[in-house]
Length: 205
Image 1 (tube, rainbow, N blue to C red):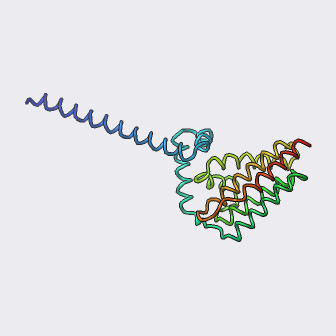
Image 2: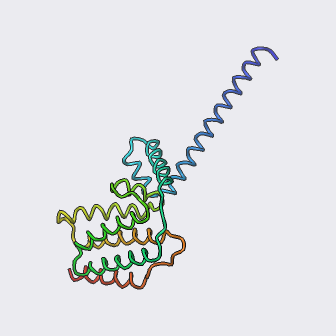
Image 3: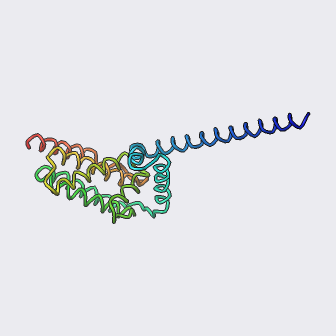
């Protein structure tokens, strides 16, 4: 084999290896993207909207996961869970006569439940990001409920908005209370009864 032929063979081999490396990198990147999409759902799209590039968005989501791993989350004991469930039922019953204050109390109760579970709660955006690692769908609803709660403070939320907010807060409270392994589901009959009362209140409004 001549030197020229040998050089050509080496160049071709290098090109093939480089092409394989590029394909491998792209496949790995696609797998990472797929995993993040599956894990974060709507939060993935939100991160894309807020970032300058998909790479930046995915880096931010991976940072969320790393931060979440360092959180010292704890399970609630039975008395704590029962107390939070009772207080949530009170919030839903309050909605019947006072939707505005019910939303305010729902927002405060959510923060208490998150704090009891071990989530840092000083900053809303940070606690929503932390929550999104395990509960992306609920987090999307939490963000919307928080937006309505803020509008409610300014007198810019109607009864339907408030009903939607309380429903979203309920989803978050249930997710946080059910995320405990050894617990039984909350009293669905009571929740359905409270939901019916909320709907009746909306109809009368």
